[in-house]
Image (cartoon, rainbow, N blue to C red; front, side, top):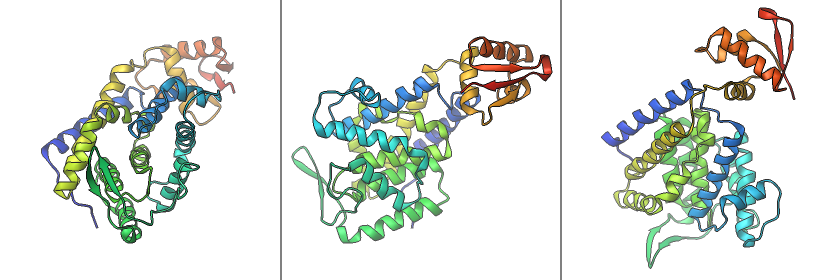
Length: 319
């Protein structure tokens, strides 16, 4: 069963824009950011997603925790960060269409914070915003069938992955399968669905856009609840993704420096030994002379070792 939503002109336009930007990013080799930027974006993702839920720790605090430094702060806030770091480090091991994996990820996110971490709730819950109940979640007895249906949709639906990721995010919020941690697992699962199709989304901190537009985020959820379909939420999330891609394109220069090209190549190439021809397979738009200069730069900087000369030269990536 497909969860209800409509395809609007805004959704079509946003999807087109997102796919155009994904193409640009891939063409300019920005799909796998440099290691320092990947780390920075991961920190921004964790900080933003947890701040939405009331966590008080800053980017500097989270960076210190990642670097195994002790910090002063509320115990639960520190636990939330440590759990989030652990689950984000395991993203490539998670299967987005597996309910078992979903429950395991929630267990990591909420361990030592919630007695029922990784378990579907066994009682009714409502969401209170301000002085009002903004949403009453489905009864606990319905959860097993609702979650099975949602993951069957995720596994078998032919919907575009952009739509599917937004629908699943919304349905997790609507179903509210856990006593706590539903927001953070919903955002995590959307990231996971997207990155499996487009790896660049692993390091795209679109949660920062959601944090900046937090009231709009909740309003989009409430509108979708009242309308009985996820259309408004899909529009909001696609706009957030589109704007995040704009930020990535603006913040990243072209691959016009040898150190950037080399770093990208080393992060993508599967073997230690390679030739100039292998290098040019990755960077089709540069000349052989530029490739030779890049490789010489890599040798001079101690990133590579070289054997042989000219066209027959082979290079090894240093550990």
